[in-house]
Amino acid sequence: MKIESLLEDLDSEDAARVEAAAAQLVAQADSVVPELLRGVAGVQRTADLQPVMRALRLIGPPAFDGVLAAWRRKEVTDWQAGRFLGVFDQRSADQYAALAADPDYGKSGDGFQGLVRLRADSEAGLLALVDCFARGRLVPYKASDYARLLHDSFRPRLRSLRRDPAVSPKVRRGAMAALVAGGGAAALDDRDRAAIERLIRVKIPHETPSLPSSTLSGWWMAVPGASYEGVFEALGLHDRRPVTVAAGVAASEGREIQVPAQEGRARTVGRAFVTPELDGWRLVFGSFELLVGDDPWYDMIETVERVSVHCGQAQLFFLDDAGGSDVWMVAENGRVIRRYAAESDPEWEGDPLPWETLAVDDPDFDPGYDEAPSNAGTTGARSACAYLSVDPGEVGPDTELRGHGWLALTAPGVGHGAFPGTLRI
Image 1 (spheres, rainbow, N blue to C red):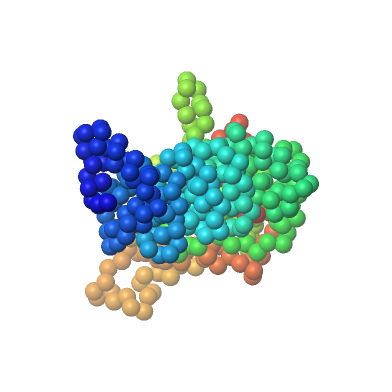
Image 2: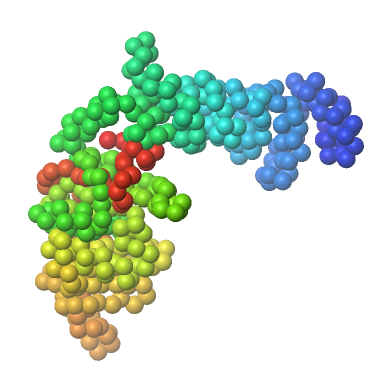
């Protein structure tokens, strides 16, 4: 049998030749599949794999097993295996579920990717989902998508697992995580929601805070701990709830959602995290577009001034390494009193603050050659934040912590349960 001739027949416009070639491939799968896979050694382009992928799809489940066996023996690369495992149809749904349950993170991800593509609703898929969430922190690729896709079908079965005394505590924990991944906190019953709230209250006094480092691009605000309550009204935040720092950071970095609005249009809603009091300051993290606006320069000034009206003082820090932006500003009682902004040439507004190092006082400054505005001082949000309030990257065991953090929403009437996905608390 010539593999090349069979592959040519599959591309023929003669329906009879195609049908005959497909039948021969299926009938001789045990010998054909290994030969097909040996023939792709060294192939590195998807286009060059297309004839083999078509043949594997026609063969179906036996080819699935053959690809998986060759992958485990390292006879095909990870990249090739990913391409091959993306071609099978509903006949291989159970095989995808079995692969999703594989303890290997990468192989499990390929299994869930197949389940999502086929929209496969099966008990084996549900159990694989529970198992992957029960295993620990790292969730395989597409597992959360699968939980969301089949949430309506899986919810009653997962809730039943939560209350089944015959299953292990590990399985019950996995079922809870799968419920939250698929439908948010709203997917849980009252008993589980109360249990999570108790766990958060227990963990809050004992956690060591860790925030996104200022060495990474991003943005945040800082307000005085004594007057931070005003930030909720100033930024239009709603439905605040106590939260651990770990969960608050994860939520503020998570995806936004679309919810129905008037006249059939959708609105975007996100989550904002207000930290516990850290060395006398509260920091705010969340979506820049939702909390500040689309116009970085105008909206940053307007926002920091508005927040300072409610809190007495407000600071805003903005870093964009890709775009070259570095900004910090301080506002008091509705007016920016000091601002540093750099994209190419740095600019300063307002009088230098007492802690700033002035450019003219720098030992390397030569008045005969160098030029600097009279108000030129400290540069860069990464250095200024430590003097102004708190450097997020330095928050840790030695930071004086008071109170707890808050997780709030950028719109009313939505509810925290509308956000799918799990948060580590």
